[in-house]
Figure (cartoon, one colour):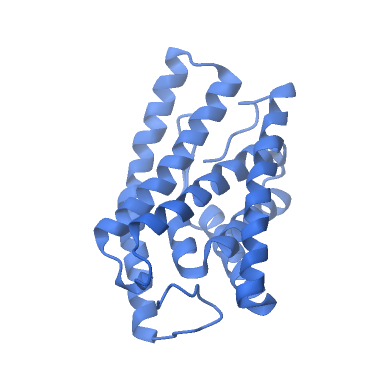
Length: 222
């Protein structure tokens, strides 16, 4: 989902900073609410776990260049379900920043666009989760159909933002639309895999019976 150097250039890069600032503002509100509800130690621990996981997602898991971007196994719904929206947002942003600073400095000019691509779908997923998972239902009791809806929400958001940035920078030519179609089709593999990962991780959490753990979101066990 990285926007590669040269796709968006010049003054158009500024839009990424604007959209990232908006996503960061909403995320900061959630971070504050989570801090009040769960305390600093829990928030910091879960954010650190999400950050480490994000770096692993980007650098260690398989990723392929397809069309105008790269297909990454970014387990956004997994992070949200296990750690909570606020820690997931912090982890995705910090993980992306660390990856840029330490491993891919050429990605830094695109940081605003890339963080927008990760955070806005996460915030949308937060709202969809409230509609898909009934209040009081532990996440460990999710069905495959529910997990699939959550995965589709997040990954479709990522693909939509990649498409927006590519067309913002390159225009909506036939070649651009064709490459975006290839990219979107490739991302369907992630949509198929992510729900299975979610259910597997939740099954492990259910077996551990770590209810009330400060290292997990409060909804994991209800």
